[in-house]
Image (cartoon, rainbow, N blue to C red; front, side):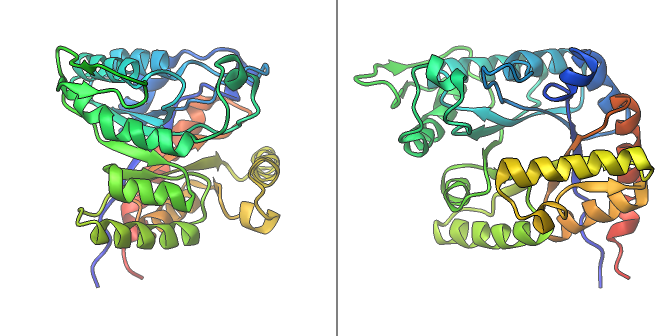
Length: 316
């Protein structure tokens, strides 16, 4: 029996809840730290709620991360596709591709939290977002590539040609729903779910591959995102318990299921958790470090786990 292929491992940059505890972080330094530790990607989130919850703009953060690094991929996980016209999003992504030497990986989603003040301020409702996301998925590659493309999300749209065209980045569909799996299988290059157990990921990957094969398309890549609480002392255990409660309350997950989602503990325990996701079909695991302490030190603990991952994947 052979060992599994080593998955890529990335980390999320500290741009959401971390701001409450430590103030606005040095994103450039965080991205450089992740690159120096050998991570494959840095992930930027897009969760502007407009209710006072801290969040940095995802595209600006991605640009800073790209400028501060030279090899690590910049993963949008995920960019809300409907908060601006597709043509403007395409222009931003094409520019980032040129300025980053084609290091963008573009996760796209329809956006959550439909009652958030931010959505209302944009004049958006929660209606028909799925269909509009599919329209963006259809036109965005052509727009980024500089091809003459109609913008289907605008009534009576003219054909638009952006220049200079760029290499189209891998496009992933975010979300764990059946609809997200279908869109990833039929309209994108990959699937980017989050807050799933390894068992749930196994089921989703099976469905993803079946639907892609039925559509005559190659199997999409799978990047799974999730939280990680490094450490096994009392403080780390308390942080983990609080995080599990947030998962249960915020995502409506039963407490016993939520408790199986975050990676936690020693570096070896985290490596075993990463291996479980690899066995479930993940090509990449993107870790969001959850800590009340030093983010930089916590990321070093995850890097140690990454170094142990190859051994954890060996058959026993």
